[in-house]
Length: 465
Image (cartoon, rainbow, N blue to C red; front, side):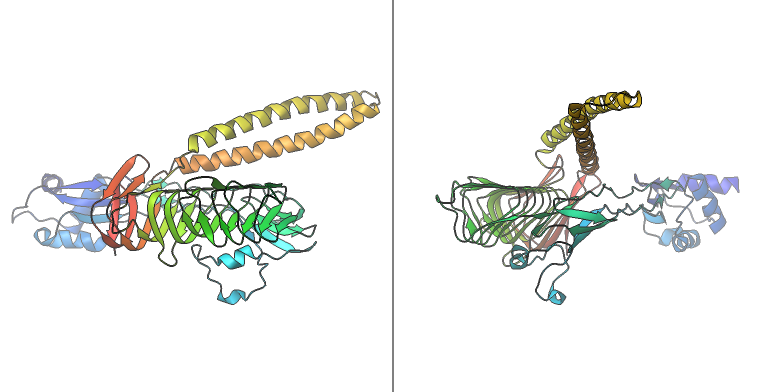
């Protein structure tokens, strides 16, 4: 038996993939006619080579019966990949008045008219819920090793502005307009302009949602703690929302101004625009000569669905119909961590440090006041007020620290998967398109149809359907 095992090793070797999810038999030399090995010999050989799990029996039988008839390399074992859990997220209630049975459920097909026309909610209305993170499922390598999975990222649900919680459910306690944030839902007051923004109305800085039932000309500024909705067009103006930004007609900015949203940006088209979204960017028909950055994904899948010129950057997915054009206009796609990742990380670390310092100082003051009470000394009216303020400040500081810590953890997850995104081009991928995954770059030098671009084994991989 030992002689046969040595002979197998003389002719064949086993190569286990780097991720330990696959093992292949490699033929180093052609066996002579007298060299034969039974299935038991091969089982012993595989065990000695560390292949213990996921053995493909039919392939082992083939190589044992007639090794000369096999095409090498031959996959001999296949492991089970770990499945990571899904992160927690906020699921808003369906507050639209239109017929929801016809609404598409796909994430990249959004009815812009519907999301702009958000009706008001009343006190007591259900506004949404937190969907908990799910646990991961461990995998098994071909050598029997357990491949650990990651549980989905979770967060602590907190009541938003003018809302209350019942478990994971969120209810309005005041009338207003819903603004869905990353980790909660606010019910905001609404500031509405029935027409274009002009010198009479001036710039807007509002603590709730802002709706402009017209257009926003060049040079104007709108800041909102909630969402911004513009039913017309946006020129080279400055829009900042902690929630989402919705522009019904489109954005034509001449490379001036910007749109920044803590959540999503929805519009019909972007032309020479600068947009930054913490979540997704939905540009229904086109993204032309623009700088477009999304903390999650970018979708442009209706009409021409074309991205031409400029630069688009996302973390999870870019899904479009056409990349570049027949005139070979330089167009760049970036997958991975956002360009301002390091700056954002430092800001969060600073915020976490400040919140912890503030918590420690306030906790010390609160402890001293409580100790004074324990010793039987009555607090003065000034000290009682100070104690109440200290409790409120401590709760606020703890919330800030918790939020910053959760955001940092999420950024860490992103930084560890910098090349895990996907670019989908449903129709045409033109030449002179640059694709970047982290530090890796690939220039497209031919035209392809229905292409998917991913990053695999240290290379940017282009697959054509």
